[in-house]
Amino acid sequence: MTDRNELEQGDAEPIMTVICEMHIRRAESDVASFVERILSGLASDGSLIDIAEHDTRGTVIRMRARQPASPE
Amino acid sequence: MTNVDHPGGGETRNVVILVKNGIGFGHIRRALVIAEAIRARGVLRPIVISQASSLALFRDSTVRVVNFPLLHRVASAVAEDCYISILDRVLDRLDPVAVIEDTYPDQRYRDLAALAGRQRLLIMRRLDGESFDRLRESGRLVGYQHIMIAQSLDEFLQEGHSGESLAAVLSSGKFSLAGNFCQVPTARQTADARARYAPHGEALVVVNGGAGGDQAHDGYGDRLFEACRITAGKIGSAHGRVRFVFVSGPYYAGRPLAGSSNITITRFEPNLAGLLAAAHVAVLKPGNNVLSEALLGRANLVLVPDASFMEDLDHHAARVVAAYGGKVAPPDPEAIEAAIRYGLAQPPRERRTQPNLAGIARIIDAIHASAQSPPPALASKLLFLVLRPPAGFSPAALRRILPASLTAAAILHEERAGVRPITTAQEVLTGKVTGASIVMIDQSLLDADPQSLADRGVRLLLSETSSVAPAVQRWLRLRPARPALLCAASVAIQAVAGRERLFEQQIADKLNTRSALCSVVSLPETGDEPSTARYLRTIGDWLAAQPIRLASPETLIATGALRLLEPV
Image 1 (cartoon, rainbow over the protein chains, first blue to last red):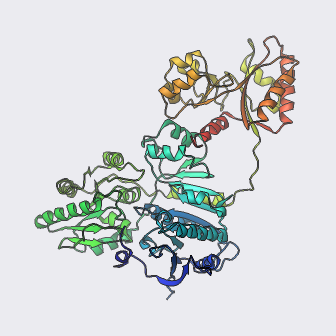
Image 2 (tube, rainbow over the protein chains, first blue to last red):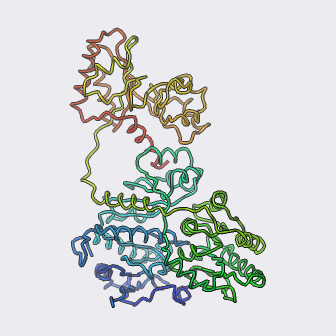
Image 3 (tube, rainbow over the protein chains, first blue to last red):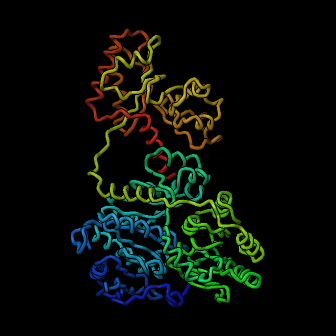
């Protein structure tokens, strides 16, 4: 599999901003609020939310977002 | 974002497109074409939920996207469970009026509580026959209200599908063939690609191996680009006006690619459709989407098949080249060079496909229709009733005395405008009767070739016994027809005037434990017209009072074809 660092080189991938992380094996892990953050990130056309990133042990899921460009 | 909360815009109901991208990009590109078309109509709000390792295709998208990892590749079972829980909750909150999946039914989706009871549609690009059979026989096509295949009927028939798959697709009523579709570049996009990559009017050779992922560990992408690099080096010294553009794909993991005086390297080209339209030669791994985009343009084709997932690229490449010209080559330097030189020497390809705007519109229509589907209703029990006239009683005479409640009953050997006759195999094979889709099984059947009946439009064989004879089943198994001939058993009833209760009891006994039944009723040989009419009126009145609907031949055939989607 292509390394993600390599994938992010160059301009193929959109620029994403980390929104939050969820530690899925901790007692305070809150799937419901994580889902709400996903939904709130989808507020407008062109919204892109990525939750594919996780650590190698699969214990931390990271949410990233790209907001659509502001109208000029 | 839920269906209740709809900030900005008139769309208030969500449609979710579930798509995953393993090796290539075609599924996501198709999903985006559909999502954009839904959005353009302005009635529903499309939301793409993808499983992909790269976000490149979403970089310029204007629809809403949530990207998950490929769920079968996450690092732990706990993480997979967590992601599935997130997906389930997201879907529940989005409360979609329709859910669209692409090509491969995902077991994870089927088991999501949030998808239970949803209108589910499957859009399916071309699959090879064996793969389609596997999906069908595993029951994975059952859960969809409708399946739209992105192929024309002619294209679908060329795939070598089994008789059972053909029968299921052509007769069940669950499938529609919308024709292939893909992103269509505008003239501006084509001009932009030309200006960017061939500003001095060079002939463009565009090389693309899909998203760069390898289907097998045979270094396909590495070999493809290396062969093209060597070719570019040789051609570059002889022709100064040829430029190679290598679109490696974000997943490319072969040797590092380096540009040269006549090679431009890009990992991803969002305007790939425009670039292909500007090309003089397109060197492609012939996956469905990129090949479809190339066929819209005039580039001469060099198709380099690779191991594929359910696509049988070798045979597909050969068919495409036979129809559109070009060469099929392995990813070896000599073969690639010869094929590219051949392509450069040809004038731009004349034969090309046209944008399938009507097909996309049909798909979008189907999605909107699905979103507006009325509340479900339980189906009545189905009875396919065949009446055999007594000797000396013509089918037309019998039709005249049928009560209104039996209008939908079939009459053996009846010839009536707009109605497909029910007859015997012999009459079809001898050409005495044409247009029959259902024939009665008789002794002459086994002397015939099943295909000869299928070629004459026969779709179902009806037995006058409670089970189809093993000899007939063996005959069908050993000489399978395409499309497959369906079979149905029936309850044979010898009608006796004044003993209508016997008919009623037999039908009730059978239909109490099943949803559909065929019955062949031989009307009394000794009965006169008034007594026959009385018999028909009595059983007609009884049937009308029961939760029974008389099935048409088409319904009987569709019911049989739907069973072909059940797991074997």
